[in-house]
Image 1: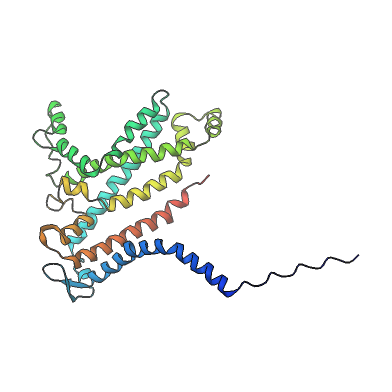
Image 2: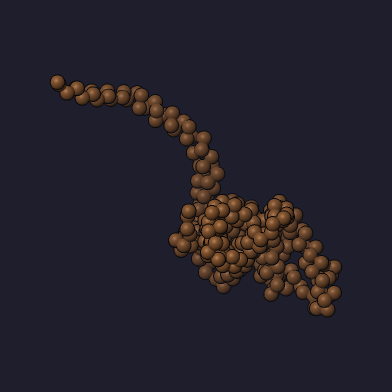
Length: 307
């Protein structure tokens, strides 16, 4: 009995057929590439161009200055801006993520009305930055504000929440934490909902309840959600602008001037139109975001347990 003949190899595709498939693929990619180039590549290239040029009184680039704008940043004033930016980021990310985690863990012990309470804590996420900032402006008002009214009832001295150099930055941090708390609650609540019931039941059988259950079971399994919140919250904090502009306008005496607000002041405030210096600071901001994100992915993600 003779063995069956091996199947003949498929004939090579014609060059025109391969060209047609390639052209079709590029045709599908073209809209995305156009949007990517229009809203990312071009603005980035334009920013680099402006950072290397000086400009006239109305902001048009008129001379090449090289790295002059970057050299101007080697000053104590810009160092203070960077320090304020880092303090603001730390003062919003750490309490924001920790507060959302505490709220979600506490709500896990509530049997009735859990969904209603989660919705109540997530409600700040529905507020716009402008609305929340205006509300907190009323709270922080030195004369008839809600917070100073409470302090007065308690027999304590009033606090200059937005006009004191010592308190202004932390007041803006409190506002930002409140604004972002709802988003953190939603993310972590979804993470807890994805934990299998069998895991919690097995832990309870072994005697893990309350704090021990949260520390050794719930929080480790929430690692991906916590890592996501840390990264997103850091990027959002570094780019925060609205609440600073409405509450303090970078003051008093620059105590709340972050890198983003410094870019705004150089480019648009007071009719300065110093787009070259603002563009150089924007590139520094991009570098700071990239470095922070790379450090977080290189350090924190290694400790994250993905089920």
